Image (cartoon, rainbow, N blue to C red; front, top):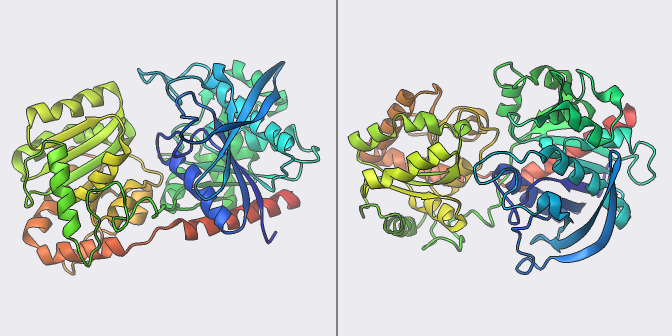
Length: 493
C-alpha cells in the first residue's frame, strides 16, 4: 500500500502525560513524525488520575462508551487533547482501573494485581473507540505486553468487522523481559476463544502470556534496535520466547528508536543553564558548574563528572555498579551525578552515597525532567552498565550533548556507540562486554585516563559524538515500511 495510512497506536504510557521509560518516549514522538509525513494517526492511552487535565487542555469527547469484557460490560468515557504536532491523543477514562498514583505498581513497586484486566480493557476500549469515531485503521500498532492482545482481537473478534476487519496488527517489543504472564483465570476476561489458549499462542506453562500471544497473531513484530532483535532470538536473550521470534522469520525486525532533537539538543534546550555547540563549547562548562552546585558537588572544572539517569532496577546493571562505585570514588578523581528511582534497596544505596562521599557524589531519588537535561549537559561522561538494553535513549541524548557514553556493549547501546580507538582517536564512547564490577571499574578508568591525558583524542571523540544523528525521520520511514509489510502480510495470508 502506498500513500497516507490510518494508524491507531495504543500504549500504556506516552510522554509527556505518563512515562516510565523508552516506551513513553516512543509513543510520544513516533506519532508526531508519522503525522508530519502525511499519515493519519491517533494515539490511545489510559486516563491516569495523575495526568493534569487543565494544563494539557484535556476535554471529554465521548461521555459514555460501553466495552464488552468477557461476560461483563464496562462503561467508561473518553477524553482528548493533542500532542504538540497536532496528533490527536485519546484517554480511556475508567477510574476503577486508572485512578491510581502510578502506572503499573504501588509505591512499594508491587505490581497492581489486576494489571491484566486493566490493560486488556484498554486494548478493547481502543478498538471500540474506532467505532465511536468512525476511524478505519489500516494499522493497529500495539506496544509491549500491555496491548499485545490487539493483533489477536483483530484476527478473532473483529475479523468480519466492517471498520476493523481489514486492519493489520503490528507489535513493538520494547522490553522482552516483561511479557504479561498471569494466572490462567485471566484468559476468560479477554473474550478470546479457548482454542487460542495453546502452547503456540497464549498459553505458557499453564499460565497466560500476553506477549507470546501477540507475537503469534501480529502481522509484523519489531523491537527497538537491530542488536536487540538478534539477542532476543537467542536462548539467553529471548526470555523463553526466542523460539517464537525465530518462527516469525523476516516478519521480526529491529528498528532503532529515534530521538526528538527538538527536546534534546544543547543548542536550543530550554531546560539547561546555557546553550552550546561544538564550535562554542563554553556553555557546557557553565552547565557543569551549575550542576555541581545543584547537586552539592565540589566546584571543579577539571574533575570529570559521570552522569547517571536511570530506573534503579537490576536490568540497568545498577546492582553490579553498586559493587564497584565506591572503589571508583575512592581511587579516581571523579564525581557522580545520579538521578533515578526504582527498587527500594537501590534507592537506599544510591540515595545514601552523598552523605558518605560529600562533594563527590550527588543523588536525586525520583524523577525530574529538568535535572535529567542538566545532567546530560553538565556531565563529561554518561554511564549505562545495563544487563540488557533494547535500545536506550540516554546514550543517544548524551552523544548530542558531547557527554561521552560509557556503556556495556549490549542491544541498542552496542548499536549506537562506537568504541574509542586509542590508536586513531576515533569513536564516540567507551564500551565493555563483561558484566562485572571489574569491567566497569576498568572502563571508567580508561575513560578518565583519556580525559586527563589524551585531550586531543577526547576533543575528537566529543566532536564526532555531537555530529551523530539519530533523528526520528529515518526511523519513522522504517516504521512506514513495516506497516506496509504488515498490510501485505494481512492480504496474502
